[in-house]
Image (tube, rainbow, N blue to C red; front, side, top):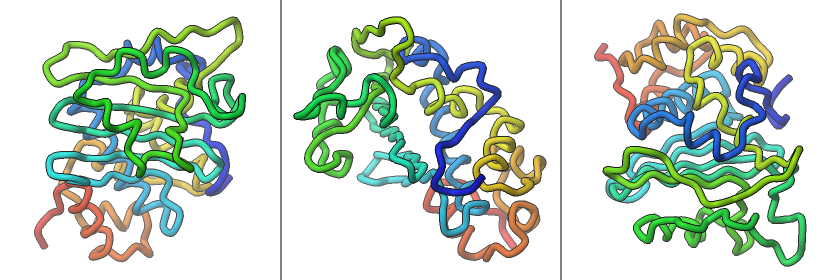
Amino acid sequence: MGPFVRLSVGDGSTAGMNVHELVSALADPEVLRARCRALALLDAVIGGSYPMRSHVADRRPGVDLAAMDNGSGDLYGIVFDPAGVFLYGFDHECDATPWREWPRAHWPGLLEGLPAALARYPADPELQFEGFFDATVCAWRETGADAWQCGPVAFGPGESDGAGWLFELLVDGSAEAVRRDAEDYYGRAVDPQAVAAVLAGVPLDRRTVGALDPAADFAAVAERARRTGHAVADG
């Protein structure tokens, strides 16, 4: 299996969940941000020219953006804003796809209840496709809130919004799940100790990068790490 395929992550234990289960399973925002940063850095090393995930620190002052695009039409974005966190995903094959009708329309209730402080993001042209915010999953957490929230979406038997498989790895967050996902997606063995070090936030060094990809350019990877906000070891 290689780039530009639909990924299969984790052990499948949460793959069937929808957004209502997702908001109960998501980690607190700073833990989630750290996982997003680590996954983006791992993809930058392992994925070479085809990283699946990215993390841009200070996309705007104080605002980070984590993203995933598997090259097959499925993606997610997570905006870390001083006002809170806005999370969305798009599973192009699920029942909740806006493409189920024309003109495109969101699944009923998808954005209902979104706080005004975060309402700019579905309208952000950089997060839209052809002038429309393509999303099948949305959740948010205002700064100071003690739980994630979502709109009053409803699903019939067998209907899905893709939340389970899109965010399963971020919910799990374990080194073993991340290693297995990387091996499935990129089609090669991945060093488990190096994965664990990156997930733990250990400053990136040459040994870790070399264990993940002996051919990687450490200077280039270190610069990518700094852009995500991940510390780099001296020397």
